[in-house]
Length: 438
Picture 1 (cartoon, one colour):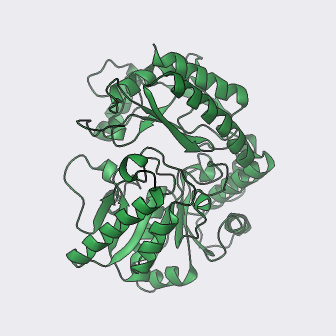
Picture 2 (picture 1 turned 180 degrees about the vertical axis):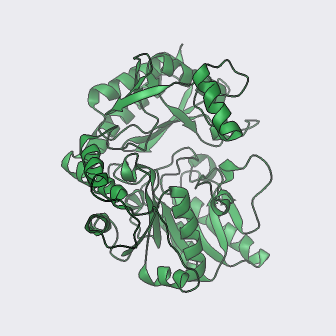
Picture 3 (picture 1 turned 30 degrees about the horizontal axis):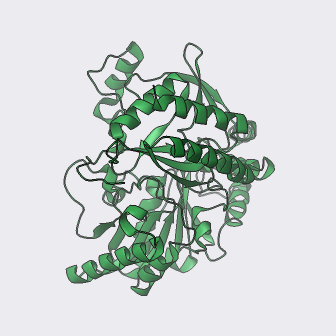
């Protein structure tokens, strides 16, 4: 798909409410409280009151099929998570300066899903904190400072992590110690994604050398969700990881979005590429709505950081969060959610590819499990974010929620709860097809 003359779009601005749009009292109240930091979805925001499974209910009773929120990944208000959190908060909730059994029970269950080398886990409250800490650990372990990311990456909102999140920057440019490379797409790298992406990383490493900067890390979301979702071919990440390690840097797998069984074939996004990262960061779906996140690291790397810098997180790894996290892992296993993501995701992908074969405006469909990207284009073949917004609005009218991603804001980001049923997937596909012609 040609991107000539296409305008780069800020993802948070896509189909977002803006002050001055018609508003209701509840919206005015929110804006008065949060001011310029308020981010509301849709030009006519929705006031939600409850949710269950893959469905959310607005004030007034309208129900929406949720294909947007990947935080309640095992399903909104999953009974196992509700019970675990309720029980634990009635017993004890304190920081990690005390030994509490549920915390170590959780950490051991989490580590069982990870490569054995990553045997230390530092708990935080958000993916932003996790990525911030991972960069600092990488710098201590490697002695370098440079970080390579992709050109529309989003890794969080701390001061440090904002600087490695090109999609968050409305003005200015990246600092000298950050280089953004093109995402692993056919548009940038042709048929050989693996070699092309490796070459992009090697070019960034050469530029760091010219700047006199030692590399610390290649930091990527392993499904490249903010770049527009690029999952295939499985294994394409390996050569780029070899390149960063050969230059003395480390590989940080940001699993905040693709982790916890979403891609179906593997519990972690990096697993599809046959990789063992130097660090794994995680968040969002980890607690199914309870704020929790973490960095999994090698003991020697974490020790190198802690030798110079004390680290403690008051709320990271608290017992209530640990109880929620353990319940999420149990729900994924007991409800067969990884298998469900693979099966329902494949069915949905096939249905969307059928729609694409009939409608040229659907210029690309790709993904893994229940993480799928749908590219929309105009008659010229150029990315069409305006069509994307119209489709998002039309799907809302059909009671389906979805958001956008990608450099030009023309990619629908499909990431429903992992408990999605075949009937619910069919509802989405029908709503999408109808919305193209709304």
